[in-house]
Length: 163
Length: 393
Image (cartoon, rainbow over all chains, first blue to last red; front, side, top):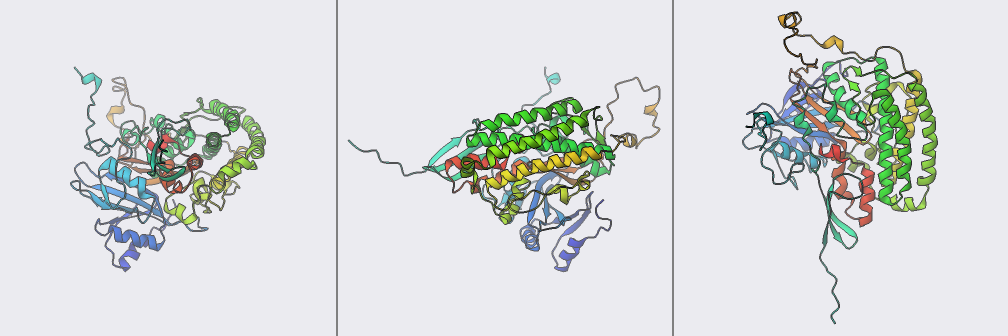
């Protein structure tokens, strides 16, 4: 295990500047997890970029509970010269299921281009200000959001139930 | 007679999903002005098989058949990440011998993947000969894999807690012979390709990415290292036992396609060095360590009694994931392959997101081809090293 001495470094720093967030503890490897509100996300994303987190490693979405919220997860890292233990943070933004819209971070970290398109494609969260937000993996005319837990695959039936 | 007026509009050309450039089913819609490329839009999804949704159904130990189909040229890495993620989640210790065997297999797989990158890359540029040479070396690697795992390509070798079976008798000597032979093979490629003026004309200065830009676009693997950033997850993360070997990160400064080629050739040579060190230092001992974790919950439940043993088929023992989340990653030959795993106190994970290196490295393609000629597209696309199995999943 990496960090024996788990401390909420980033959370304390954000509190010092009075930025609204909520700390969600640590994940299995000791990476700090923070929850940011949707309204604040675009400004806090710029703050993180300026603070040095220049590498958006992975952006994914998941369904918190069927009928509940949808969560968008961002893993950020600082790539600097000569560090072998880079700082990382995991940020989650939750949106309600009815009208899921999150500001896009494409203009800050370009690596969100295809990843946000895939999140839109799979779960239906629309990212505002993304230059080309359209379906990327499914055909463009597909209806429905495949990775939601309440998604019903059209025209799919078990062969043993067919009569 | 009227002289035909040359059209002044831009031409939109479709490099359709089937094309003979061996990169898989990738569709590019190009906007051309004569021979210059104005814009390019990649369209993906032709090989989308819904792997992330499928991971809800089969349990963690049988998913190996799916994962090797993402990056089907470097299959050990996909298996390694599938196994590393639950191991890190539950803190399962891997015995030393298994760790060494894994490193040997991973580095052999890295060499195999870089070889099969080199062949189509040269074939796209126009040189058909290296395409056959690489298969000669890849056949030797296939033979080694088949002796150890039973399958040439889609091995089902890695298990949670170790590997499936030990190395057969005499495998280590055969591997040493392969390493010696391969070093002469790499010298042959250097003589044929690296100082070839036609190759250099085609490849030097094409598709330049700066260091800052590469980090911002989220690139990883040889693309990042060719732009001057020395970021290799084997040194940064220290997973498996890479820190016991003596090796260097291969990197270049220029950021063009020639730099990416040199980084990959260098990585092949470093991999051979690592394999030789691992083979010399491999310890004895057990190769798997799974039995400890199985019946942790209901120790003496009545359903395990004698009377119930023959009622119906018991499902094969599985690995239960607790309710935590984790982002695990390995340094695949194409980049950083990661899995974001949210466990759910059952054998099926709640979310199993794959972070494919090819998908993210492909984002930069429209930027890179913007001012290039039509013939440079294949050079740039080849040097990005994508494989549609993992781009589309």
